[in-house]
Structure formats: C-alpha cells, structure tokens
Image (cartoon, rainbow, N blue to C red):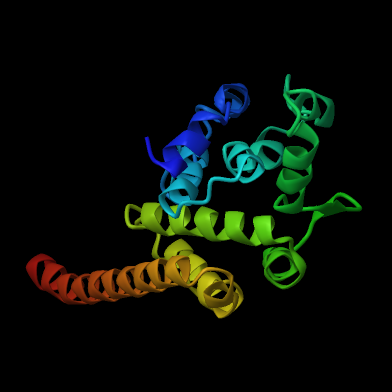
Amino acid sequence: MDDIGQALARITMGPYISKAMTLIGKSSKAGSNMFRHQLDTMAILVDYKMIDPVLLKAAVIHDLFEECCGMPGVSREEIVSVDADGQAVYDLVMEVTLRERDGKREPKSEFLKRIMETGSPRAKMLKLADRISNLISLGFVHDDQFVRGVLAETRQFILPYAERINPNMYREMYDLVADRENKLTLRCRTCSTELPAQQKRTA
C-alpha cells in the first residue's frame, strides 16, 4: 500500500457518511442527487491526492446544513461529537454554507466571493471540488437558463481564483466550463434549426 493508501486507511469516514445519508432522496438542480454529490466531491479531493481528514469528512456533509437544517441528527452538537475532528469539520462545513441574516440567505455572488477571497485554504479547496462535481453533473441538465447561470457564475466568481488555489483543478474546471458552453451552443443551434422545420410541416 502506498503512502496515500496508508493515510486513507487511517481515516474513519463511516460516521460522516451516515450523517450524509440524511440527504438521500434530495435532488439537485445541477443534475444529481445530493447524497451522491457529497461523495463525488470527496472522491474528487482524493483523486487530487488531498488526504486531509477534516477536508474529506467535511466534503461528505458539506451541504447537510443547507439542505437538512433542523432534521434529526443535523446540529452542531451532533457533528462536533462524532470524533476528535468534529469541531474542525463543523467549522469548515459552516464556512462553505450559505449564511442567513434577518431570515434572508446571503446572495450567491457574495457567498462565492467570501470563500474565494477570504476563505480558509480548506474552504477554497472544498469549493473547487464541489464546483467540479456540479459541472460534471451539468452535462445532464437540459434547463438552458440554469446551465448558463452556473457557467457564468463559475467564470465570474470561481475561475479567476482557482488557478492560484490549485492549478490542476483549475484546468479541469476550465475544460468543463468550455465543454458545457460548447454543448449549450450546439443545443441552441439545433433548436433554432428544428423549429422552422416543424413550422413548415404544420403549415
């Protein structure tokens, strides 16, 4: 077993995956279900050889408080008491969770700028893995307006910072954005050519 394998073998993920199971059945606009998205995000970090126990544990529950706040087992006390990393994991999850003020969630643009500009190194890395997972799933989304929004958001608020955070993750994200933009353009062209043909057939 190599050094990475040995390091992974020492990390106990089960209790956090169990917490993440609260997300089973919750769908994502980005084309996947929320439980699988948590595991995908963790897998992306492992793929980039980021064997940081706190980072990986936070990855598998990073959407838990946004999506399941108030549900049984979803509280600060529950996460902090999981293991010795619990407090650090909870703090990281909260750092990448949309904040609420006066009953209103912070705008997505402010949320992303907060993480990319002033977030901790772990928060920035987690957000890159999260967005790569989102972009992969985006290939299965047919809501063109939603796809355009995610791509524009990525170009404006994440890509400008990503290369300094992790050049390899930046390259993957850049390529995914370009690919999704190309597919969107082709889809729009197909729709624009098919519509006149349909109109002729019904005329």
